[in-house]
Picture 1 (spheres, rainbow, N blue to C red):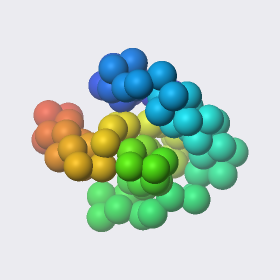
Picture 2: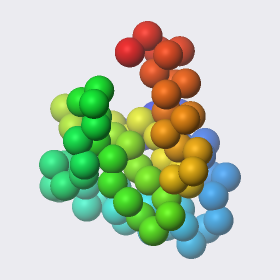
Picture 3: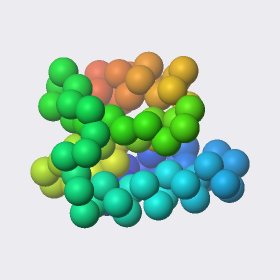
Picture 4: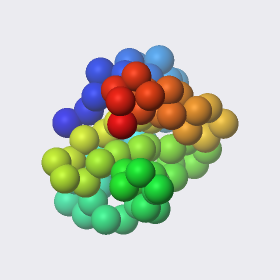
Length: 83
């Protein structure tokens, strides 16, 4: 599953990048523990200069974007959701 905000981010990315991220998401569904564990229990994985932030159980992509901004936007999403 991909959150609405992550899906919006993917649609705004260049096609080549979003395809690479889509392939990586498919790999993560099969091997969800591959990413770096973050303080809040979610995980992050690199795709070039981009990052995918996701939850393992149940598997959900929470955010995707350029490494310079995705962590900031994910922090805002957490505050809005009360996490």
